[in-house]
Image (cartoon, rainbow, N blue to C red; front, side):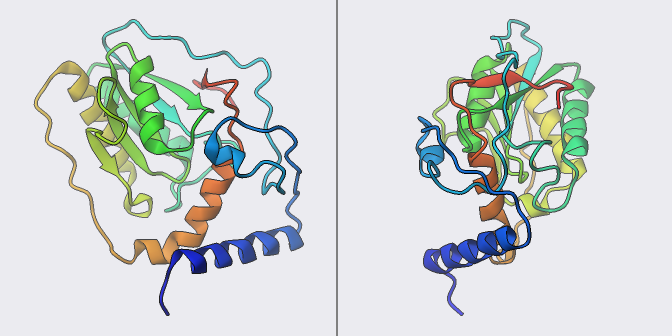
Length: 229
């Protein structure tokens, strides 16, 4: 069977409908979002209820040159608790932070609520970081290392196949981001590639991305997420 975008959309719609029939709690979106991705969901039935971040602390610009900011997705550790490959997100973030700190640098975690694109998430984290370097992690596990003065698609390292990531890989991501921030020579992490990953996980990945996108709150921007649930 040929796999194309129309087939993916059809399968995704069928899965969403099945989730609703099985007792998922839909919620109608009433507020129009400014993000183009989130806006495409406006007025449609939600897969998960919209989370309120009322009272959340807006992330501040860092000043510590040793700081590396980790920007996580809008559904990270809340609506989604495991990566596409089944790794607990608590362990993912713990290993990324450990990698940064093993290099003598300081980590800070923020939740990005104005985009679900991992490249832009990483770039926003880098711009917020005192060192100018940041990491973006979607809730499904896709990860990017970025530098503040690069174009969005010109990242330092990209890890697109989330199901193949291990906790050790995430730890190495933290170490490499810290090394970039220190100005050291960095050996990019070799990424395992499986051409069948997209076919195996495309529906689940699409659903996770929808869940992430529908939690966006552009008015909040980025909020501090260290130890928050």
